Image (cartoon, rainbow, N blue to C red; front, side):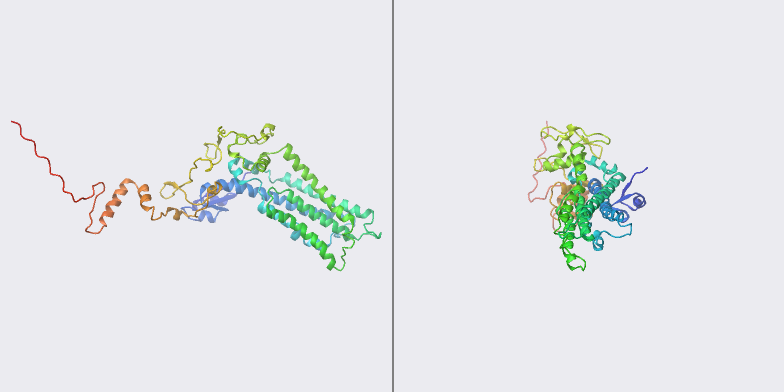
Length: 455
């Protein structure tokens, strides 16, 4: 059927189903940990599956797909520059770069950005993904990873390697870059190529990152900083190196700047054209969040229930995000349970009451208020009080024990409990039955006199 399946269970009878599915989710509940031990992911309650799929699943698929194509791209650019040089050296397998630059390519120069993409990239904020589960279809439609996207990145890598090599090669090959008129040494040209290649790859990976955090800035810049430091220090300690001809050359500085800009320009133009003229729902929502971070997306009728459907062109009227009046109720949309839903959670600051999350006790079948910390309370802004297991949730403090027992115990059971508690009292104390009046020291009033017989 060409589909991926997910199985979720909480008992030993679900182990075979979880192992047969592509993704297995186990619930740690009343039936032990057999399902959890056999699953790929473990959750404490079934309702956590919503955030596991729509937020963490969406993020994971998007960031891993982006990381894979960028990882192959950065190696294609490096190998492409080496391959183009084989045309001019009779395919003698001579490296155009100094060999130590190749040793450190996947260690220092280009590794950090793809790691940052795989760890910290977020295609869109988590609250939007929870409010609009319709965005999950982009993963099912293979928008984040596929053969078409992979081929595009490989073609870009080959094109950029050709731009870097041929522009710098013919720049150094036409006239001498030295003031004394001597011919250019090969590694003067090679140093310009490798620095331009590393700078282009790191900036290109950063351009493909959706969320720029402090770690992403560090990852994109660390490779560029390290290769510049290495280029300045290594020739001074190497017997055959010399920077007296590399750094003073105008070809070195203008060649790097020009090559980097020309290589990144096609991707920048493509992303700008898509964002301006052919945006999808994710582009529109990201733009709206950056322009107005406090916009109430859950109650905006221009968004909720009006997302783009597969194969549908973007309407220009849908791109205009207008402010909605608070008095108007947005049109209901179908929730995951099949009931009409009116979007996100109500804010406590706005005076709207919010229902507490409920939990059903698997042993008794009673529904009560969940007092544990979970993802839903985290999104609503509640402070974490304490992490509770199922056993600690059933524990009631001594202060609230009488009220809790009286509220949860049926009437017949309360009567029997009072009877047994009266039998355990020490002698000398008055024993009262439930429903009887308490004993008093006053004597009961005498009965009224009988009426006089009639004559």
